[in-house]
Image (tube, rainbow, N blue to C red; front, side, top):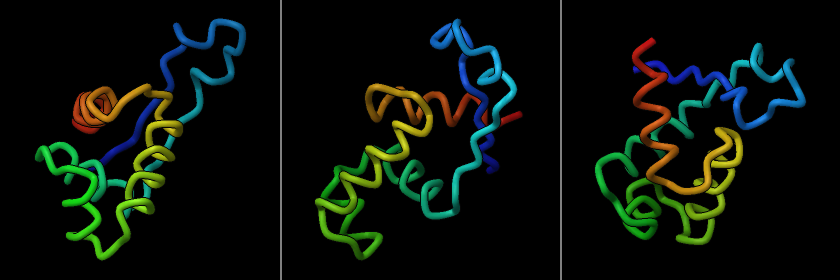
Length: 85
């Protein structure tokens, strides 16, 4: 599955350049989102990926920021929606 995410221009009406920006997720970030998609908790993701829970939480937060999402569910939904393109 490829995760290439385009920014939603409706969230950034003042910056039309963002509509052309593509956000490429790293393999590690893709794995984080895949784990989240399966319903894994932060602790479960941390254990599976050999991370501390705090690192797992921080990395998920970074991915959500990168995708301009406010929560994990939104990030997973966006990645699934755009990943099929």
